[in-house]
Amino acid sequence: MRYKPLRVVWEITWKCNLKCMHCGSDCISVEKSEQLTTAECLDIVADLKSLGTELITLSGGEPLLRKDYSTIAAAIKAQGMDVAFISNGLAINDDNIQILKAINPLVYGMSMDSADEWMHDYIRGHKGCFMQLLAAIQALQANGVHVGIVTTVHRLNFTQLPKIRDLLLALGVDSWQIQYADFIGRMPHETMLTEAQYWEMAKFILDIKQNYCDRLYVTGSDSTGYMSDFSKMLQGNWYGCHAGLKVLGIGSDGTLRGCLSQQMDKFIEGNVRERSLVDIWNDPNAFEYNRHFDCSMLTGYCKECIYGPICKGGCVIASTNLGDCRCNPYCLYKIEKEGYSSEEQARLDFSKEEIAALYNQVRELPPEFYDNYEEHWDCCFK
Image 1 (cartoon, rainbow, N blue to C red):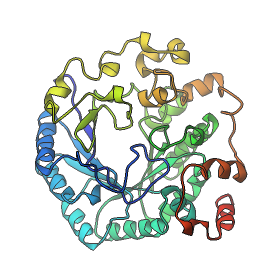
Image 2: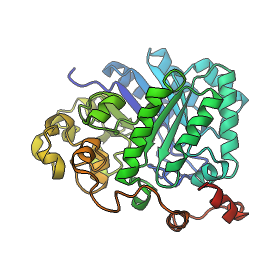
Image 3: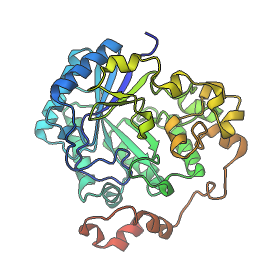
Image 4: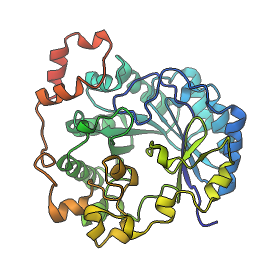
């Protein structure tokens, strides 16, 4: 078998108890009617095992809101595969802790957007979720469940990274993934990091690797890089996007994509209700953007880059979302060689007034967020 979906991310539900402003899947508070049944999910687990999958990460929405999540997770473990979770922590209670303790996931990942209580709650649209997150971290750790933290970075919480690092060290969390927010789902294009902020984020990750490696394992997402000397120190060499080669994304309704960040319809490879997962994966015409990559697909700077045949233009979805299918602007090698692409992209710091004008238009918040609003907003920038 030429290609194996070694790592699978599976949105087992679109139902969510939060409304985060950067949600890539635009999740909602109720489950969509086309959600896969338990039996269909178990068939998927068996198919993934037959294809050589090693790790399945259950996400959402909020995966714990799906009533049979433990049945799916147990089936994954029974087939000899590892299981992990990506969660917001809001559904953690005594019952779920005991279930997770029995499942023993490779890691229970939870999202932390800020070390500031009000900012985390503001980004997630739910008062009190920061304190519930802290309680969930401590409760899971006390029961032997390995906790990892994921931080999605955009202009609002960019300056929070050192504070989050210090909080994780204090909590004894030893695993942290830092990723930039992409222009998908609810995420407005204007809130994405500038190239200068992206560069500084990469420097921050490298600093932790060099100075905190005995206490905190940190990584950028797969799309952090790519071929500069700097990026090699971050995560080794980059040999192109793995979507459809070693990675697979599964939607709650059985839709298959090479990566769940590929939300555009053109990236849909099929649905398990119409064709089996095995048939779709093994289709020689599937995932053509990666399986049939050719340097003629490269555009812009990437077309002339000496690493084009190896890097393949970086993360497919990041460049596609920004309008140029195989030329990723978030490239450390490009920044090293040519600097930032514009005066705007060279900006590092934004005033609280600029940030407020941008973010306060993203979506309405519950009334309680406006109690002492100015005071809270000021504290975010101290």
